[in-house]
Length: 250
Ligand SMILES: NC(=O)c1ccc[n+]([C@@H]2O[C@H](COP(=O)([O-])OP(=O)(O)OC[C@H]3O[C@@H](n4cnc5c(N)ncnc54)[C@H](O)[C@@H]3O)[C@@H](O)[C@H]2O)c1
Image 1 (tube, rainbow, N blue to C red):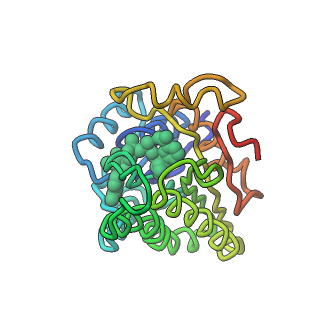
Image 2: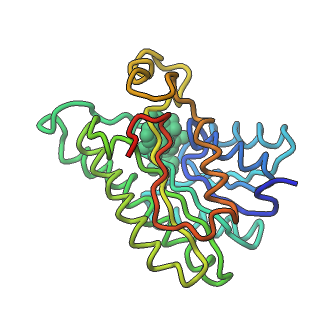
């Protein structure tokens, strides 16, 4: 028996990186997973891997910054499985696409708007799309992926501002939805080697800051995701779990 048997969970940005690790692990725990990513071919590849491992996955090519696309994502889950138990708002404008890393004067207003569209408007639209179905059933689990950079301030302004907004959204939505049996929490990952093809040295640079001195991998975040998607977390809401090997130690 898996910890998430029968649950239907949508993972935005589930095709690659951290989202892929959530999708693979949720499926291994018995969940039926919707991979809601803008990258169709990468989503199909991850769904095929889940299928080969004996799990169930549906691809819903989704642009989280688009309201119609977010609504279609929720409808696809309902049409296939008749329910939505969980949503992980993981898709982000961060590495794919890559944000400008530099002083605020180098960030264009256009990039600021694009980052906010994916990282803030995206979770808003996806929550808006799934909440009516969750409220109808009187149960739901939402997890918003923030970032440890919100606590450290060690990143670029447009990105960190968007990840702070995610924590704000988590707190208000938790209060709004508690009476409906819905929990809303955040996970703040540390700097994570989410693409093995990229230069590992930038991740190795983070190692000395940590209590646990090794590179953080996407799989390191999956256990927190399983907990927040399972009944074990039914009395925990509005919180942010920092999973960074003991870098922030808040
Ligand atoms: N990797 C890190 O160091 C790190 C650290 C802290 C927080 N995070 C957060 O974790 C999450 C995942 O990060 P990652 O490193 O795995 O990212 P990634 O760039 O490897 O993957 C992001 C995924 O989101 C998808 N995506 C991008 N825009 C989208 C859109 N508009 N609609 C739907 N899908 C879209 C991409 O196609 C990709 O599959 C993000 O929210 C990121 O901010 C990452």
